[in-house]
Length: 321
Image (cartoon, rainbow, N blue to C red; front, side, top):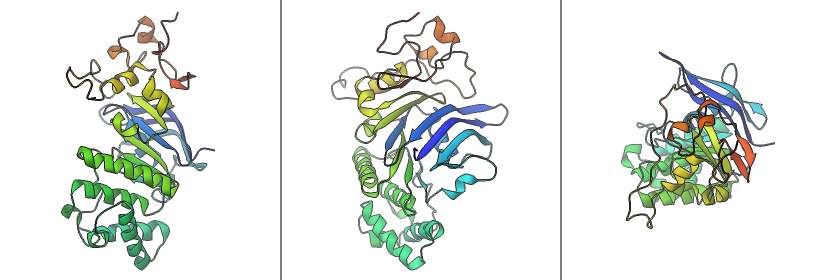
């Protein structure tokens, strides 16, 4: 049994009109596995994770099934509350915003251990220092007495990771953990996440739009577009030969020194607006391989060539009848 099992997950937001942010996603996360979810902004990556732990906005509704160690997390009440923190940790996209500005760093970390693990305040404060050392924050004991605004962006990111790890989760959700950090700090954070997963025996789901980040970290890559997974494959296979035109476009858009002299590769067009209704393939308006079938028939996510792909004409196959 997988550690996390997601089946037919859909997320709708109500308002002047209904907007479907996640549309029928199936995904399994194994124990101690790292899976990266990639795609442009607005593809549903963050809402997928938030739905799993019951943290959608007030106007959001999740349908389907999310099971953690066999326990259903969707349903009446807030069943996901039982696994937040202790079972599933969360590093949010805005590290500074996830820290309480008027509380000292050490108190915030200790509170997480007291609330979730039932630790004493004395042992939790000592554990907070050890966790800050583990995430390689310089002068960890002194940092415990500081407030979030006194730290740099990279330091706050390390504190946010430490905060998510204080309850000792089995699975960590990291939503764009390198956003707004400079390149050298990004590399440090990625290396840190890899080491923590290895040392703590923890599974990781990494949400990002940066394929350079996932190349050194993920075992599998899920590509999301307009609320759906359109490709799922081993990282090595995907980085060598993506099958969906959208995944190939993302990969081609990664800046390289070899391509620095010419224009940067881009994907034509723009992602669909929230709430767009689809008759066929949702990537069809931007796809150079699209044919008449793509406009009227929504491709299913099917197995083939070492992964799953939702495309009538995948890149390793010619046009089909």
